[in-house]
Amino acid sequence: MEEKVKISMLWQIYGKLLTEKQYEMIDDYYNNDLSLSELAENHDITRQAVRDNIKKGENKLFELEEKLRYYEKDVRTRKANTRNIS
Image 1 (cartoon, rainbow, N blue to C red):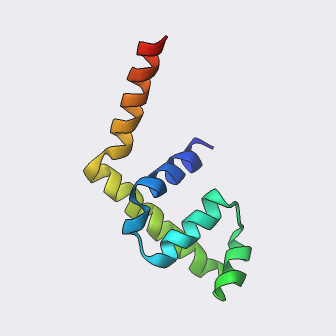
Image 2 (image 1 turned 120 degrees about the vertical axis):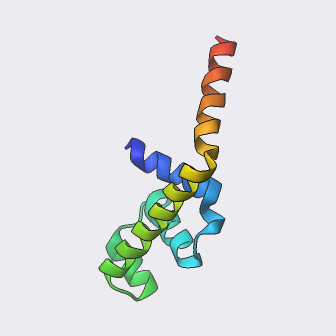
């Protein structure tokens, strides 16, 4: 479950840097809970093509996070703020 949440968060941060198809498919798959079959039908492509698009998009999101570290900084900031509130 944690991996899905992380990908969804990375999509929110870096999503606009993906291709339009990658952006839409990751949104539909992770945020709207559509299956590969549903996405394939909606985009008139094969399930494998959907999976490939999603995987390429995921890889791009992780690559961007590795370079820019916005997600990591946000998590650290939230943890620090939580400790200060308590």
